[in-house]
Length: 308
Image (cartoon, rainbow, N blue to C red; front, side, top):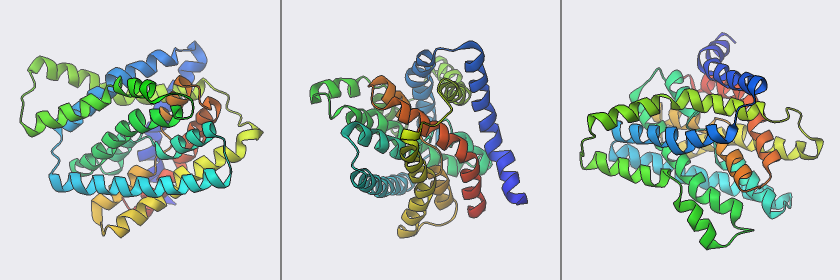
């Protein structure tokens, strides 16, 4: 119990405080969530993605192992959630929303600070989390956009939206500049530093604003659906990650970092996609809210079991 409370206090509480500040700000001043989301989506998130990929030493071996883990893990998650949506016979829009709520998890504004706290700013585990964040930034901006639009829009429209996403350009640019050792001008480096430093705090507060902007009461009609999404994300997620690292024969810090990265709640991107494309926004918001609240316990349990 002492270990559990220590992890809860040192690893989870700092994140929860910033989320709570966002909730209080929204309840007091009614902030514009779309403006905050655009700042995170088009400015702060690409900036920290560029900074971490350009400035973090990532070996090809580490890159290959993490990407292979991610592919296998996502395949297992997708297979599980697809079985659930078919068994429950969801309509197309709800199928998309359920997939997004399970497959897209908060690897950035929750995962990065959690990794730094859980592993005491270890640069190796941060490299692992950066690669997971890279993939979790790329997938919602490509597959996620397709997923919520496939049943109601043509491919040309979907492709146009996908090509407008900044992350799909920032990732290859940062990787190419690092690989070819292209120096970043001091002025540009300073600007990127300022923007990336604003990411974690702003993103967590934005998440709090979104949570404070919606009803906290779960509708009875969607209670079973929200419970299913949260169970698949917070319980099945870490279990499937543990199965994946076991199948790959991974041990030590890498295995622990990958399992912790999979234990975080549903990503805000699922809500942004739901709102932007009018695809089950109430369900998406409730899933983020409930998974974020319950993750304060489940994440601490996962870290305690790993002894991170």
